[in-house]
Image (tube, rainbow, N blue to C red; front, side):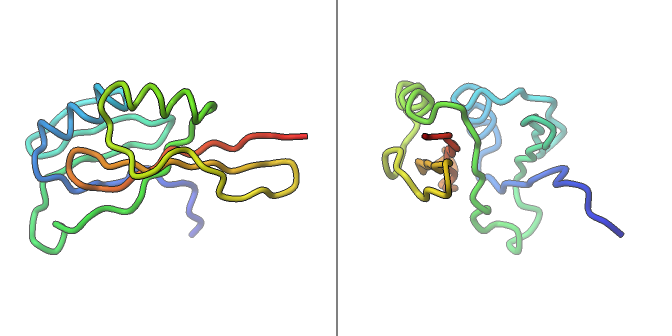
Length: 123
């Protein structure tokens, strides 16, 4: 067996409609479809599944999703204008060789923490 890629990431939500609006209207992810208590979005080949937890076992906060963007400062400003709540500003995480990795963390409407990330080539 060889794992090829992550095909889908599930994020537990408390209010499905509120979560759909956040990921669709604020993050701009294409909404594929909704089926019952499940909503599916597309993110460059990886499906994002928002779901109401089937049991208490799945009702905990999600993993952190790192959304890669070309320009973290412009993306940060755009999401701020859409009233996305950030816990920090874009900041340098690491510099490896000629590549700087920048991140800015934010909360979705369900209390999950996610991040914008950008890898910038510098001279």
